[in-house]
Image (cartoon, rainbow, N blue to C red; front, side, top):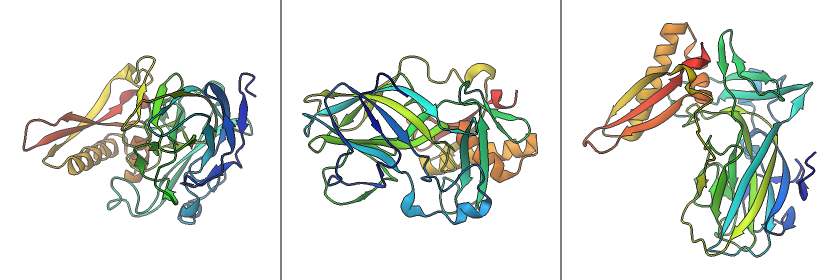
Amino acid sequence: MCKACNYTIHGAQHHFGWDNSNPPAARVEPGATILFHCQDSSAGQLGPQSKLADVTALDFGKINPVSGPIYVEGAMPGDAIKVTIDSFAPRSFDGRGFGWTANIPGFGLLADQFLDPALHSWSYDPSQMGPALFGREARVPLKPFAGTIGNALAEPGLHSVVPPRRVGGNLDIRDLNAGVVLYLPVEVAGALFSVGDTHAAQGDGEVCGTAIESPMDVVLTLDLVKGANLKNPRFTTPGPVTRHLDAKGYEVTTGIGPDLMAASRDAVAGMIDLLCAQRGMAAVDAYMLVSTCGDLRISEIVDMPNWVVSFYFPRCVFE
């Protein structure tokens, strides 16, 4: 229970797409602190007892539910919503935090190489948030955040929640964790802010298409910045963003060529090959693991005609 919260948005108060005709779940004054009961990206279709068949049976009309929307009084087009991210508390299942990572056929950076479904279920201590176990020896440091966070679009009608947009949405930026201040453009009266798709951990790129998808309670404070005229979201972090991964250094593979997407694919495929050779992992397991903790980075984009993309895998996962 959040004693400082002015409002609670329950798990049933969610929607599956951006639509500025959605009735608000609450109308709040700027400065309100709100507790959101956020569902995981499967809307509960995958749980601690789920099996592989449940991945192929997913209803994609019920993916990435977001809690809300919230009408912020006084917000008008051209303003910005200032979102102070206060805290994340994983939902408990028999005293344990739960998450899942899946290879969903047709989805992910290497979808053409990984055609079959795969599923890994995670269990972790929700109070300590220590590293979560993958297989027999890999331990992924946790850093919870909301993958989808944004405002309604000006265009009428229902818009998919899957692509990120200029007003936010499915950003999947792993650094939007507690302590961050995020600014989102407003395009409709009241902003109609929503949040969901909570993750326990993710690497930059979320390369297999899923992170550690984990239902959580999120506390946010919503303020209003008049006349901000933002074209896209921006945010400020309170300190270092990779401290949870840096301690043991990294293994790094690269992709080099004239196409950033092809170079990204090569860098990730190279890391999968390296983990398979060094650790004896199945390729699909390596693919899911690196999605939760490995980082894609553009290392160089000026020396035409070729660019360099690097993939950083934290050695602390195995040490």
